[in-house]
Amino acid sequence: MFDPFSHGQFLHGVERNDFWNWIAGRRWFGGKARKVIEWRVDEIRAAGWGCIAEVDVTYADGREVYAVPLAWREGDCGVASIASRDGRVLCDATATAEFRDWLFQALEPGAALPRLFPGGGVPESKVLTVEQSNTSIVYGEKLFVKLYRRLVKGPNPDAEITRYLSDVAGFPHVPAFGGSVTWHGASLALAVSLTPNEGDAWPLALAAARAFFASGEMGDWLERAALLGRRTGEMHSALLRGSGDDFAPESFTARDLEELERGITHLESATRAALGGRVEALPSAAAQLARNYLARPGRGIFCDLPSGAVKTRTHGDYHLGQVLWTGADFVIIDFEGEPSRTLAERRAKRSPLRDVAGMLRSFHYAAYAAGGGDTAERWVERSQTAFLDAWKEAAPDLHAGLGLLPLFIEEKALYELAYEMNNRPDWIGIPLRALG
Image (tube, rainbow, N blue to C red; front, side, top):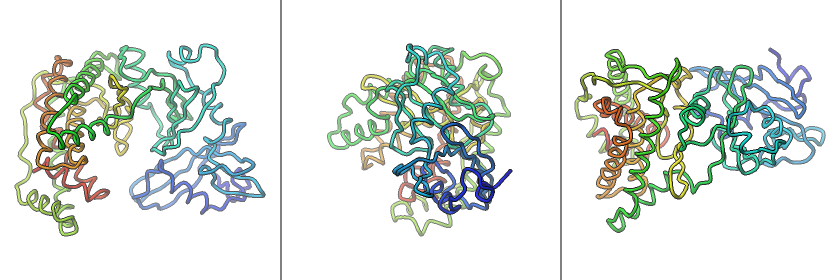
């Protein structure tokens, strides 16, 4: 290891604080709420256009490594500008065509890439301006590349599942797999076909809920909710047909059920303890919901082991924001899993009902984010029923696991409650209503 700030390397002349403050202010930096003990640049790997700095961040409760492509350029790079020295600007290299060309050429191509660009060559590219947990680059208005900022060594579930569904199962309602880039044992980028769309399903649901609150009419929303349920069931059925160590289904065992119930019990205990100390600081309506929840006895949802229930690879973080609406159909995206979980957890086989629970909870969120009111629960119930009935029809071989659904809904609501306590206390009433 070396310190490039003191050894005259690529970052010579750049103030450490300038570099760190720029990183800490990025949307893709996930440690904003954690206590940083130390950060350092462990390694800088040079290329013709500049370098990729690997920034190792140590927290009080763990560590992360981030990939930061860097380049020196003449003139200002806008929001990508990090620091200046001797009339030159150090910038995030994603702003440069040279880096984006290199990334395209580094792709290990999937089946879709030669179909998208049969003439070869490097297409024109641009960085999407909306900041996310990753950086998004579009090539030739045909290929969408997700540049991962947090480096995790090992197989990337997003690439694994997208490639399986697209190239092996032939499931048409995911973007076609275009390729990937592995960077010294970690996934650096994933390329998929660009899906023309009108946005994800979250604003679609918000608009439908608001229309219902105003008129009492569901319009075409139930048909869309059912279509989403059908596509979800078809995805789960495709994953059920997997083979090999990574994708073959497994039985959901008594041990799996025991671990699930033990995990929910522990999560509820910890969440109740944290909530008890924050009730008085909550908005009045949420505070009353919290008091009602804390006054009730502990969890009472249990189930017998469902005979024939299975575990498969799943989406892992399924909600309305993970589905694109094309204007006529849905396309399912983002198979990374929950970012807070380890790679092993995100690649683990789980009951598909966990995905179902995530989407059912997302309908509940949409209703109250849209304004709630006395008719909110009626919109939620009708939306959930349309989705679930269609899922059952599309995934007949997965009905054995339906007895687990209440457990997964409870688990999801508890995770939501813990999240909202720490991030959006004004939204805490949404999971509390589900747990009440």
